[in-house]
Figure: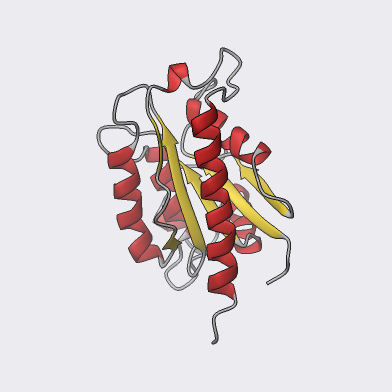
Length: 188
């Protein structure tokens, strides 16, 4: 692996003013030296239709290309009804298709999320980790970055202002880089 690490960042929210989009932007500013986060927006990804499996829309082709180009993946997810949002699941499904051509397979991955609630996005993150099994993604286990009470962690402009959360995100990114280098240098 090169000394430079490229992480693909995906936020599972389309909402303007999303705390998860803000958390991903904060992560982009908190990366270690020689690391970059390439952010992919999900707003152009259409609903998955298996009829289009063999000829996916250009936005899906671009998503798969960016996943493959990345050394690792960072997914920032809100929690909807104890799980991940449909838009995120939809993108995951597209990038795993057609069968035998998953862009996700073998990638190191990290998860974080922000919510107004007291338990943050814990259930969604655990559900996402279950999905990682079938995708053959290799999740980083610690630290868990579950940003609860997000309205008090970000200012009115969406800037992360909570120092302990910044430190936790920095630790997550440092560990993801180390995990990525460890996995990619494993003997074949």
